[in-house]
Length: 509
Ligand code: SAH
Ligand code: SF4
Ligand code: F3S
Image 1 (cartoon, helix red, strand yellow):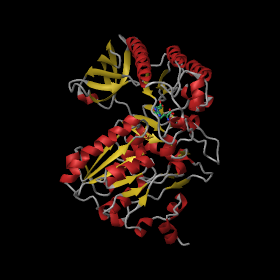
Image 2 (tube, rainbow, N blue to C red):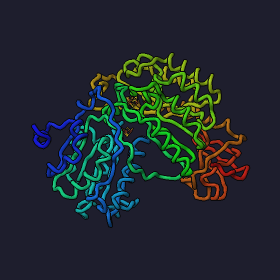
Image 3 (cartoon, protein in one colour):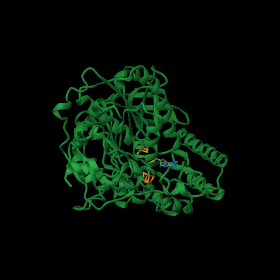
Image 4 (cartoon, rainbow, N blue to C red):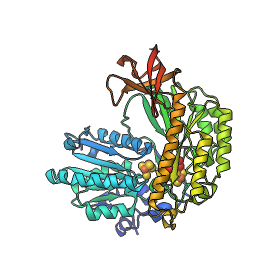
């Protein structure tokens, strides 16, 4: 069978796609729906690095006189993917707009992590139906994690025929082709690769803002926590080469960015997939800290992979911030086991002790799920007691949401929704109590604030963040935006601090 026959027979594998640059010419409409089953497989094949992204001549000018709008849901990974897609749109000649009404292309970059995240997207698709009726030439696209789910694609096919294109998280670099198809085709264009082991290096990026920037260091997740959809929607763990990351961070520093956040679903698994060297997140941070940038953060780290080398490097301080987001999910070893988190309550507490010993000023934040299938009152109490013991600065808290295709979704669950809601309320009360107490400690202290701009709620006030990511509001001239200033805290609230600038800003390089 030759390439064309194989493509037409539908026997397309990711390897074929890699070798076949323009297979879409064989189809009138691309129809390549996702498969959760394929997404679950982890092949042994090596990660392929590509550095040959370019906009084909025939697509140049596609966006002339057209505007794009992207709505982003979900995590920082999605925010950053949106920056890449915006970069591609700009390269195609499109202009950005922040109004759906003005847009010629609307993309919803979606999140599949919990049911309510998905409901928001379906609600938005409902709203867009009327707009599409008014302007049939409007292109509507769904991308991001939801497009990797079969059930979502089927639902869109059945109920949201006004969608023009669906493409997956591994297909972002194919945006020019997908748009081209969508302009030509009468049918919905669907291109979702379910299994991908590639890293594409030289994609354009239109970054939002000029003070803080995200840098992907790895993609995917191999942890398969039993409740989580991410390993299916984002594929296998694959790390970018250190030299590429270092070059990107250097470039951002030279452009004047003050804060860099290294991104990955499980950042401290960084480097585990390298076959030619032993190199981890600690080693990478040890290099990056030498770059002249004010603050370096990373998210999200998994307790299991938080090794001593990383702690040792973080303890060097400097531009490596002393705030660590370390999701614990539950304080019960039994629940952690069923979640397949691969650590116990004791392991987590010992890790926290080691971090605090090496970095005494360290502050920790976390993620917690309540109401996991069959969670008992005692097990929930263990979460509360762990929270009190660690004294997290704050936490993202969630009610467990079953995700189709994950092992936990098949578990019987004897915990009624009212009980789950009550647990969430109790946990949130504790989170607020400890946050307020920690914020109180700031009153009267002077903190360094990286000024980001006007406060969202009050344009007469400027807002910025401390190294520990505390939001600070204060009055100062706009000229200090983008700089670091010293602010004396006058009033602590539960989630933010009010203060007065005590010193003129020093220009920070
Ligand atoms: N990679 C990160 C988490 C990404 S998802 C990590 O492992 O830390 C962000 C958070 O969403 C998770 O930490 C978890 O608390 C929550 N979450 C994930 N799946 C969920 C589900 N099915 N129901 C409820 N919360 C979930
Ligand atoms: Fe999901 Fe677990 Fe991977 Fe985090 S580590 S993305 S919670 S599977
Ligand atoms: Fe959501 Fe996908 Fe991020 S499921 S949390 S957008 S990786």
